[in-house]
Length: 145
Image (tube, rainbow, N blue to C red; front, top):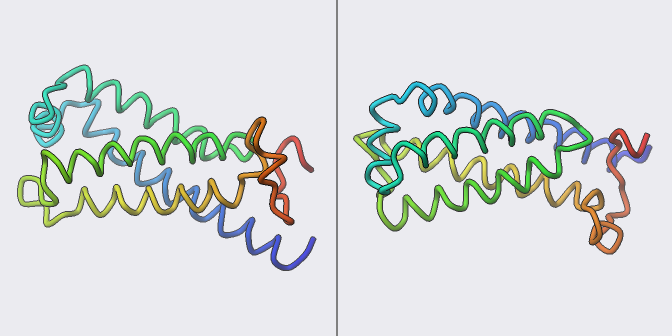
């Protein structure tokens, strides 16, 4: 394997874990109905079903990110979820929510950037368009040993 391929694999794996850990730690707050989560989703007008639905989707993204064969799908799902979160911060919630110093916004941006990089590095694994976008370095997964 070329040196750049090893580097791509390491970067992708590291960023998959970063995104998964951030998403996973927020699940506790969503699923237990923590006051902060209830406030956020009430402000958006989608409490409780939006909070629970988002939590379920984030849990799916975590699992997909941590399985090499499905990491590209987890990254894509994470990009979509975090785009929605960032849009909500910019339009209704504000950058600082309940005096958090902008932490939730920063975590959403971190997941968006990390997952976008994973999606780019693994773009060759996407169905249909993957062969058109395939990089010179294919990252190994269950389909590409």
